[in-house]
Structures are given as C-alpha cells and as structure tokens.
Length: 322
Image 1 (tube, rainbow, N blue to C red):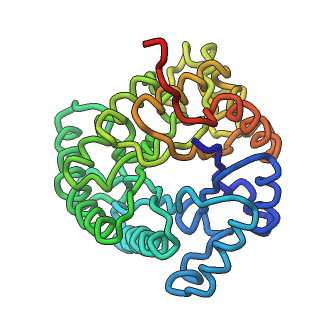
Image 2 (cartoon, rainbow, N blue to C red):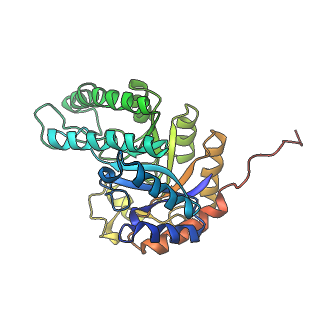
C-alpha cells in the first residue's frame, strides 16, 4: 500500500517541481487532475490524449522521480440539468478514461453527479428525505431517468478500455454513501466502484471501518483518498451537521476538513489501513489536502508523517502461531 498525493494542492507549481518535492517526502504515487472541479494544472487532458510522445515524456518524468500514477481525476457533474454542462462533464470523463488507458493507469476518479428533481428543473437537487412525497418521486426520477442511463453508457465505455471508475461518495451528489454506491454499481457494471474518501462520511455519522468492510467485501473499492474531518460538537449540538456556513468561517462550522491526524488520531488511521488490507485493498492512499487551517505543504507533510507509520511495507507473513 503506497502513500500518495492528489497533486491539485500543488497546482501552482510546475509538475516536475511538484514531483521532486513529493518524492522527497517519501510519497510513492500521484493522482493527477485533468478536468472538472480539480482542474488540469498538471495534466492537460486534451494536450496528452492520443499524443504518444507527450505521454511517454510524462511517464518518464514520473518514473524519474520514483513515482507512479495511481489515478486520473476529473470530478464534475455528468447528470447536471443543464444539457451543455452535463455533456461537457460526460465528455471529460470519457476522454479521461481513454487517456488513462493510453497511459496504463487503471483508475479514473470522479463524482456520480446530481440531476434536478424533475425534467423541468434547472438546479441540481440533493434529496435527503422521502417526505413530502414529491421528494421520493424526485429521487426515483433522478435514479431511473437520469443516473442509470448515463452511468450505464459510461460504465460500458470504461469496460471497453479496461478502466475502473472510482466514484467519490460526496454530499450534494446522488451517490454520497455506501448503499447508494452499491445501487449504482449493481445497475451498471463492476468497473464502477468507490474512490473511498472517508472525509465525507465522518460528518454523516457513518462508521468508516464498517463502510470499508461493506464495500470491500463486494470488491467495490477502486481507489482511496486519505482525508480527515473533525466534527466540532459545540456547534453541531446546536445546529446539527448539515452546515451551509462558508468553509472559511471556521469557528462557526459544525465540521471542517482536516489534515490527516487532526480529525482522528494515528490509531484510527492504522485501523483504516488494517481494514483495507482485510478486504484486499493494496492500492494508494492518496492524500487530498483541503484543510483551511494550514498551508498545503504543511498539511501534506503532516499527513505523510502519520500515514507513513500507518501503512504496511510488507506482505503478510506465515501465521506460524496458528
């Protein structure tokens, strides 16, 4: 299992400088954004797609720093009610799948997306309750009329290229928790699975180890983001965890994304690593820095420090005592 980094946090630096820095930290893999919300500072999808020379140069640069690419990321909303935005997001995902195939990268990370609540809606609608009854009807529309047809086509495209799609379970997206993740997977194919990011699960009250077991036992974890969250109970006790305060209003929020170790201690992250191994996941733990209380570099360095002690460097030995 490798400690990795989603390089978006270093997007203001040239790729070679970012790779040199990360290699010096002892990082083993990188995840490169190439469209959507994560941008394309380090991997211009259109510039590299179908360009063998550019791809070879990229792979050599990564290899020169003793790194590998764990995944390509293009987080966007392919289910958006604006047809042009949905088409653009879908194209980004399809092109990223092709590029991943050409680069020999086996995973593309993205969001499930979120439709409107009906065919005439203009704004994505996150439905979180079945009542009043029009909400249940909206949810059925979102799944049956929009999500499943769109994702069936994307999953077939991924299968044609031998690429796994890692869906980041994210509130304000249709798939935001493990049972929804399995609903989408079962409606499409096994190339659709999770980019397991615990930071979005903590504040929902989901037990992260149990979620790993639930998805892992069905071989539905394709990639993992290492990202922490701290719930600030003094605020949550008053207003709950559905918090619309800006992320920059840190003292007023019920929860914040935090650097690894600042939401949950080292023992918890060792439990995550152990549970991932139990279900057969040996891929990257790709650090995503979104902690507004520290700088990107400091957040990365503290995260690498914790995770480097949590990950196993060897395969299990013989159980000689058994």
